[in-house]
Image (cartoon, rainbow, N blue to C red; front, top):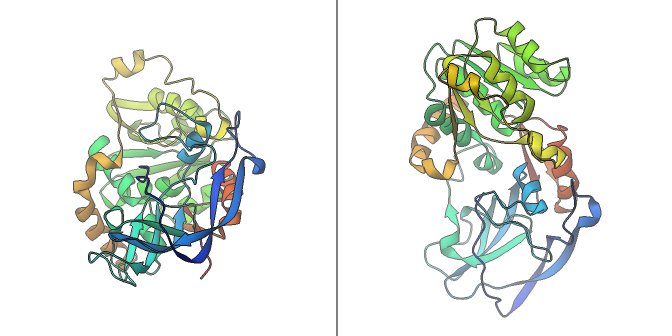
Length: 346
């Protein structure tokens, strides 16, 4: 996530809308009292600005680290008393800039509010007819694609392991790996029902509930010949187990740290790095912002996969900004499958 640029206050208003602010810096996971939802006046756009009514916003585990004030992320923390930010998609309802017109569908970083007013250059127009619902524009498919193709250098015939496989990125990573020629795709998740969802609706070859004993034992059982690619959304025990089971010259794409995000405690790290050296493993962190050149290629393929029914887009929709703080906590605790978005009122 990237923070939106701050904009000056504008004069004149004819609307009101809700926005969410952080009111306290929690120690550990936040609670309902750490947020406030308030109704504010919505100004009309000044010259060079547009007014956007948000339709959907993204919920992401990394937001908990911004709430906690983590200093090791490539984005600014949420400040107390200020509106939080995040990816959102909305419709232009008033424009004072010729680059965008009323009715345009735009993506931006001004989530956590019903209306956004900002410079036109901070909004990116997208194709209204690209997908069955505008919320799909907020999906994590490009993250999964970049992680597999660039960070992990996926090759046909690879055995791929995806942690947090029922989440926004994991559901995409497993399916894309299969479509790109992986011989076997394995996922870990937090319940038997989710494991069945992965192997049923989403086409994973195998999946397991990580609560069912040591992860390394489950991996050795399911992948006795080893793992070539590990798509890591979790860190912690998952990463240490994957290293133990990886085949020589295996590749690890470091995408997320859900273990740390869900507990609020520092990650114990990958453990003994002798296995990494001895097996000549590659571990590569990445951010999608470094690979924006992949976006057109991915978009074309993703639309084709969707239209042909080759990929399933898994999504959980939460209604109303007032429910967003609790939904964020529930998301990290594993309550949902696929991409989680908040839908604003019409």
